[in-house]
Structure formats: structure tokens, C-alpha cells
Length: 237
Image 1 (tube, rainbow, N blue to C red):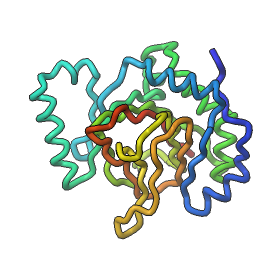
Image 2 (cartoon, rainbow, N blue to C red):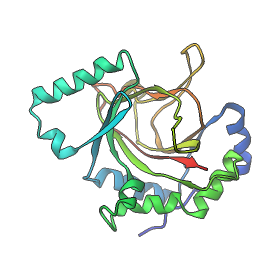
Image 3 (spheres, helix red, strand yellow):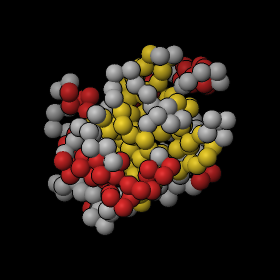
Image 4 (tube, one colour):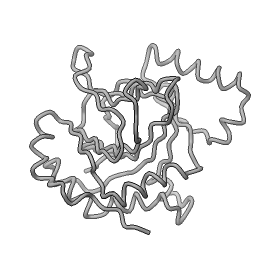
């Protein structure tokens, strides 16, 4: 198996100035070509997705098998309830596989997806992120895989957490040939609710931003021709 590697053309020290200027940054061609191909294959071949969503402050997960066993009318009613809540409060729904949590719980031992967690908790990745963010106290990262299908979204929030000391969020976008009309942008907001910048889903592109900041993932349009796929996590003190 190919070892995951950051593209050696990237100098985190020089990129750090760009990140500190606005608190957010995109880095195209973040990983080596071989790594990008392998990571993309992991996403496409993964078959243990969980539908993650919230009801108020409570998070829930439903396996893909459980959700797809519902009758179409039940699925529509479920999504309708989520959309109604999204109109008045924080809400999200998308497919995910919480890699670092699965490893912690001893689930799916030896699964190829778990190699991503080894990469992002390894010294090579973490030292790059310390130099990029200027935060030498970063000690580790968690890791997820995400798959936004049509109608999935994540409304505005700031990534604060009651117990995890988050320094920054990273999203390795792994979605080739995305049309900007399909939605799914990572959008950043000012204090008036205006979008000040939005990152389009792309292939092998790292999006990183310092926490806290108001942001959202805009809904993937019902006419999108493919899912929005990525790996992501938070850099933790």
C-alpha cells in the first residue's frame, strides 16, 4: 500500500502568512498524485457509511442499511423534518465515517480507511500543520470521511466544542470535476451574514481555517451529478 504523503512542493512556512492574513486558505494539489488516487479510491469503495444528523444539541447516526430500509415515504418525511428544523436552527445531514472514533472503539480493525488516521496523527502531517498554522501546541488530529449526497447540508456554525480544544479545521476535498452550480461550497460569513468567500468542492485540495469562524456547507443541489466527498478533521491542542 502506498504511504500517504503531502506534496513536497508545498512549503508550510511560506503558506502560513497567507493563512494568518484571513484565517482560511486553499492549497490545491495538497497530496502527491499517488496519495490522491489512493484516497479517492478509499472514498469510492467504502461501504460503511452512517447518516449523521442532529436534533437540537443531540447528534445521531443511522447506518446506510437502516436508512435505505425505510420506505420512500418515510425517507421523505425524515428529510422534510430536517429541512423544517434547518429553517429555524442549526442543522446538518450527510453521510460520514468517523475514522478516529472507529479506531478508538476497536471497530473494523485493519480497515484500509483507518490508514488515513495514521497519516494525520503522524509527525509528518502534524509538523506541516504546526508550521502552517503557527501553532506549535497542536498535539494531534481526529479524522472523518464525508459524503454529501443531493439535499445534504451543514448550516452556519463556528466549530466551537465544549470539550475538544480545536485550533483549526482541515478538509481535504476529494471531488473531481465539480460544477459550481451543484452547490456544496464551504462558505464563510461576516458578522452581517454575508458570504465573504466560498470554496468550491475540488480534487486533492486542502481547505483549512482557524477556529472559531462562522461557516457552512451549502446544500448539494438536487440536480448534482455526483456526491461531494472529502476527508476532514480538527487540529487539537
